[in-house]
Length: 82
Image (cartoon, rainbow, N blue to C red; front, side, top):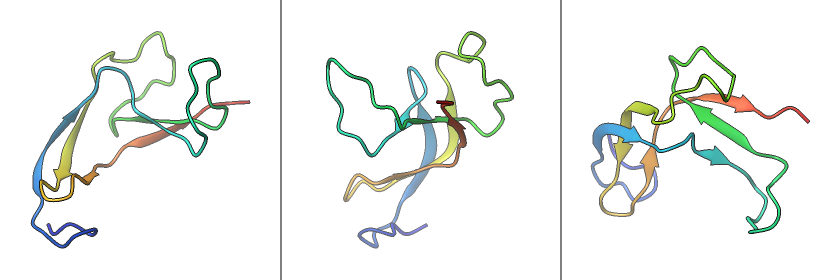
């Protein structure tokens, strides 16, 4: 697979995390958590409870571009309820 950002060849591997990564458009602050976060869980994760989640999830089939640092992976989006 070629990198959609720089066009160089990407390498396939597994992305490991300590807790689920999350996405937000808000700026992070030490004193305030963002309110629009979307956590990204592995595709085979069938739980939405923070108490039963794997604390070290693996995202298989993640692509890494060593030229520009772009990482591409698939996951299930866990939207936080407001």
